Image 1: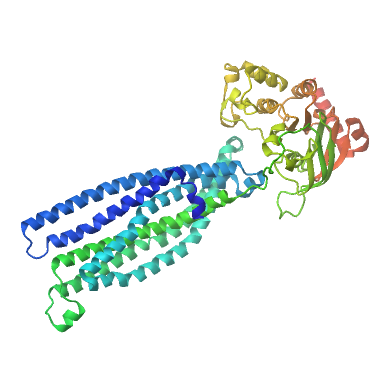
Image 2 (image 1 turned 90 degrees about the vertical axis):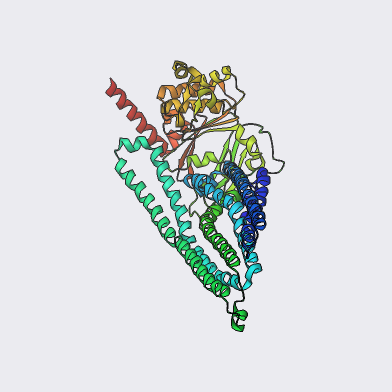
Amino acid sequence: MVKTLLKSVREYKRASLITPVFMVLEVVCECLIPLMMSKMLAGNAPMGQILKYGGIMLLLACLSLTCGILGGRFAAIASCGFAKNLRKDLFYAVQGFSFKDVDKFSTSSLVTRLTTDVTNVQNSYQMCLRIVIRVPLTFIFSVVMSLSINWKLALVFVLILPFLATVLFTLMRKVMPFFRRIFKKYDALNNSVQENVGGIRVVKSFVREDYETQKFDRAASEVRNDFTRAEKMLALTSPTMMLAMYLSSMLITFIGARMIVSTGSWVDNAIVGPLVPSQLSAVITYGVQMLSSMMMLSMIVVMLTMSLESARRITEVLKQKSDLVSPENGLTEVKDGSIRFENVNFKYSERAEKYALSNIDLEIKSGETVGILGGTGSSKTSLIQLIPRLYDATDGAVYVGGENVKNYELDTLRKEVSVVLQKNVLFSGTIKENLRWGNPEATDDELERVCKLAQAHEFVSAFPDGYDTYIEQGGTNVSGGQKQRLCIARALLRKPKILILDDSTSAVDTKTDALIRKAFKEEIPDTTKIIIAQRVASVEHADKILVMEGGRIAAMGTHAELMQTSAIYRETYEMQTKKNAEEGGENE
């Protein structure tokens, strides 16, 4: 886990290595100051000696301050840079995920890992560069210096260490399960916010603000409750450390006083021995430094306990390898738009009991127009997602241009298979910028051409800024039908060999739908077109129509053939025709 995370340090290695150097110098200076003080106050020191060691102490204090400032500066540079690279690596990893991988982690969980988890790891990294280096060094130097002054007094600190270590280790073990639960509840909290903000129009139209508020309150309360339990346990670290500090100070003061007023008896000389006040002062100072370092250690334990779970979650994403990868020496050219399914079965998860698609055998010639009809849940979308390898078939094979889709470079295949998905997405930016997702080098004339094909040019030209009109986040300032037509235009700009419309004209009127289909037939006759639709009118002129039911192809043929052979198709057609006739009569 640590090795995986440290790969994100990269160009900030220098700052990460310099920080501990300054921290070491700072600790050395701090630990030398009490020693200089003991020498300065030793016996009846002359003024010259006092000034000499006083000057050295002042110099050490200034040097310690300078090293502390520089250590803090480089630690900030290193930790912020590390966090930047970590977020970038996480985002790049997510970009390489297949739909299956995204389904595994969920959007809200990935957002939490990119924000809260990275922040926790960043804070821990900064603490590790500064305090984790500082604490053991301060402790070791303080112990060594204490032993050099009077080893018998220093034993007090050594004896109290096992007690502190036991307390810290026990607390860490008790608290970790709480933090594991907390981050899962963070995911649920983010999911609640995401759903609410994304569906705010639905929430307000159904007057469900109170329900959503209560749902958010429950999620927030669960996070608070687990955090409270964890913090209650971690709160024990501070009083435990203070108890150890005061107890050891009392023991040292008591024993040190006996040493100073030693009678010189053989018992006192054997047990405590002689001691001067300046040495006692130095030992107490070193004791405070030792126990302060243990206090810092307790803070590190708290931070590391939180960040260990965050680090595990981040590593989980970084180590996730997509099963949809380009083969070595993959094909870089798609010959034509022909498609073939050979005995294809597909399910979204290996643990799933039922196949989403079963026994699919299908052949589509290049340039054909194929319509797909079926009820909700009949796996129409699942079928077309196998063509550009958004998912891989569980059994069987899918061929495009006469080659197995697994033999192509992914970029090559997906550039030749344009999919306008069910959920139309436009990004923040101008209409031109959104359209050029299809082809960054497209000219204004090409943009107009595809918009005319998608019946979008007319309404775009009506905007005051035309093609420079700014699209708000999620395309909220255009209608559903306008959004669909812009997405179709964007797909056409790629000049693909295969164009798939997944119910992408559902929000446009029948007349506009017919004009789009007519433009496709006249302007892009060589492109294979697959149209998923709910309206029979959208596909009745197709060269071939598939009727899907329960993940299988229930019937296949032209409109005329299916009217004779498929009861499902015939009933759907008659129902829609009757409905249209009734609506027409009402309008008259």
